[in-house]
Image (cartoon, rainbow, N blue to C red):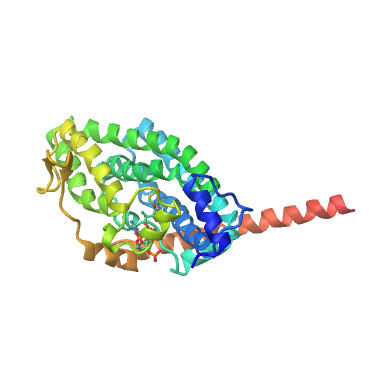
Amino acid sequence: EMSDQEREFQDRIDRDEKIEPKDWMPDDYRATLIRQMGQHAHSEVVGQLPEGNWITRAPTLERKAILLAKVQDEAGHGLYLYSAAETLGESRDELVRLLHEGRMKYSSIFNYPTLNWADIGAVGWLVDGAAIVNQVALQRTSYGPYSRAMIRICKEESFHARQGYHAIMQMAFGTPAQKAMAQDAVNRLWFPAIMMFGPNDSESTHSEQSMAWKIKVKSNDELRQQFVDQTVPQIEYLGLDLPDPGIKWNEERGHYDFSDPDWNEFFDVIKGNGPCNVDRLKDRVDAWEDGAWVRDGLLAHARKKSARTAA
Ligand code: ACO
């Protein structure tokens, strides 16, 4: 049932060739990439909000400088990803419009609040840690511009995870009150972090086709397991209690067993009903509207300049 063109395309994918913007591709391959890359870009941008909230309250000048740099990096990641999505023929303005109208998603994790400084450490460590596990795999995605964006993003993302771990380490090895804050942050953010990988493979609508096209190179459950396996020893090193009583080394599988997150909560959050969905979207729409004068100014300048060269 595949046309010759589709067969040829699949053969290129099977040979691990990268697909480039001007190459022929099936409409659904293009649409799936626009959806995933757009959602990914939106996550980077919306992801600035829970951390940006703490820049003015960072406990030291050094922590403030680090957090500021990290949050700026996230804006840059959003821009690389919007640019990469534009190579598929979808404009950044259109993607942003769809986000603002609630017609595109961004990562569930950013709909949870950051209540205190320990949360900022835990976000860097757990959330950026989960993002890296996913993004390292995506460096091998079949679409060239997406793959290349991931290589650069992963370098910056590993700095983010380390700064988070370092911040949480200082608290875990600090006073009993600091250690209790670190524990509380891990307890609250653990399940939302493992939800970032998406639903179980059996519930994942896009996985089968996306893996056949190598848009995704590892499944949601494989990546989640990888994250749990790398993170449990880090929690133990900090001397913190494991946030899930179901976490147990399974000798036979060679992996940690762990409990499922509450999937009803997950589906509720991605439908727009998480604790911060309304605020996050409002903040993005307000920022877009507040920035209109900058875009207008740049356009006016560009028009004057081109009129001058034409004259
Ligand atoms: N948050 C919000 N929505 C999600 C999440 C999540 N954590 N996981 C899955 N979904 C959505 C999917 O978008 C899809 O909805 P849609 O059809 O309306 O688009 C639905 O749930 C079903 O899930 P899947 O079929 O498994 O979706 P998909 O194949 O896209 O896999 C995944 C989800 C793994 C998140 C994939 O899109 C991906 O790897 N994206 C790139 C990485 C990314 O977005 N990272 C952002 C995280 S944080 C950061 O980078 C700063």
